[in-house]
Image (cartoon, rainbow, N blue to C red):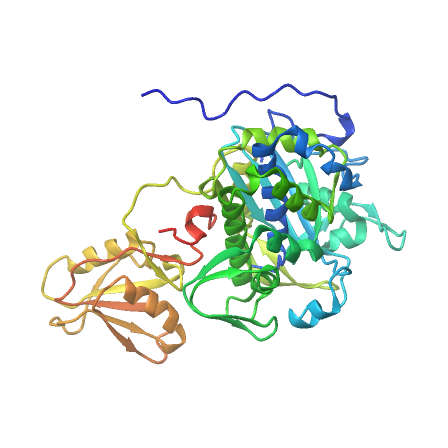
Length: 493
């Protein structure tokens, strides 16, 4: 049976656009401490996706509430155009509209830093069938182009900085210039969001559902969630995405939770009927736009244009990642500890964006996976054959590798060849990894071995019957560590 085309023809532009602003066109495209990734998702899903189901009558006038900036002023020697649309989303540390009661309840003390907490590139594919979200760690080592400091008036030559300091020194213009210089990706639109309206936006949506494999507790933010499903209100959501003292993953773990929240927010926006309810849509959108600043060419027509093209958007259409990191704690005199990107992997990542290619690997249908705490891609394993059955070690190694574990690929023979029950030997410091590995080997025995180190050992026994597929709460798959939205929302497998 024939199917209707997924992407209807895009309507012609109704008005010309200033050349200097470099607006998006049909032929263009789309760990660390980025704290407010959810604001980007709020803006993207409510403004862009919302336009798909509502239409011009409801959207008209909403853009009049957006504060305008000119991030592309006097920019020269910019990267070449690519396919699709690239939006630079930044979140600033503004909190002037947070009440004193909210500050105390959700532990939002401290003064704003006049810098960016979140920096990410959202790439909307040319066929409008995919959104790729790439987080740029705020502490990334960067080189700011020559500019005039907007605070002191001092003229600077090209010099090293942390990426989030570009906003403090030169505002949106220097931020765009620095990102383009580092990524060679041309930015088509700029959106800046203050997190003060975040809690109200989540509450207007009716909350967002988050699922956790294990308990999450952070004394700094007050987050305290047991394992399971949770319907988070605005304040709880704020705690969830701010927490970085839950485990040893620190900022990297927080970044993963932010990406999970973005996927959940998009799922809620596209499945709750908000986009088809003009009154609700306008209420949510007005809440979001009350704290948005955007380039002058991002208006009603752009909302509708992207919205019409993305009316089939779902969580499975989104993919989330961060820039591959080459070195943590790179010391720079006068700046402090920074994060250096992996030059080869990050180069490939941004090349994929420029060429409008998916970041996530091709999906195939697989049996339902067991949820575990640590991604198999992060666990190193040495397999040993503990039986007299020839080739069993190789068989187990291959099965574990196929579900994502980083096996050595060279199994060995165990000292004792008559092991009745499969054993997972591990250093107690890596107990979470051991439990994740044991989930893939039903019935195995966990054996702590002090001083063994990060390498886990599997001694395959006579009871071995195969490997179960496992997945982490926040999977890191593919060359760039990409997770698609449907992998991280509740109910995914």
